[in-house]
Length: 245
Image (cartoon, rainbow, N blue to C red; front, side):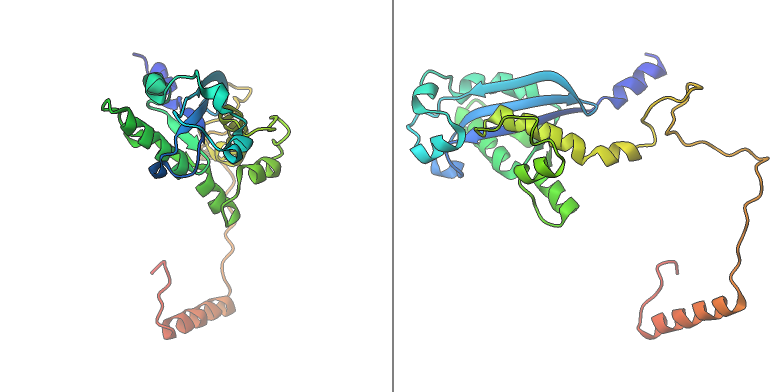
């Protein structure tokens, strides 16, 4: 295997943006997953590959739940059980980094369904890593934000028709949000970017030549030196120590 091939393989980053629709908010109260939607990204680019499944929860949902996702009891009556789709679902997400908004909710339901299948299926954490964009939004904005808020903030809310909050629809929207949310990270990656005219990476670190002009050194004056020492004395009186000492 050549070094170029190895480098190409190392640069591949597979993400799966995921969302679920459920019959309620707590799997411990018997609620189940009724829809799974996944969108694949490789190196932050949409590949067009998706995973989508409707699932029969084996009980009648209340109308207030149906009003949220638009999936009726009649529509789900002939759909497969979660155990019937579990293996193909696991194979789609295996080894990927899952991107989920409020991951605790979706992963909790997924792990509950894996256990109910009673076939020795792994938990989500055993086959995937997880990035929670709800936590990312808290770091970015100071408080957690809804998917609707983020979609409007990043101006991608018009890209998807969300009359109903379907799992695949929301996964597609979250994929657009995630791309915009992490765009600055891509810009700061010094090993990525467009190639320059000489075939070199335009963002790569470039060493200066030895014959470059000498840098101008601006030294502190005597008054500035004294002011600095006075400030250090104040810090010492307060019992603190500068981080460089």
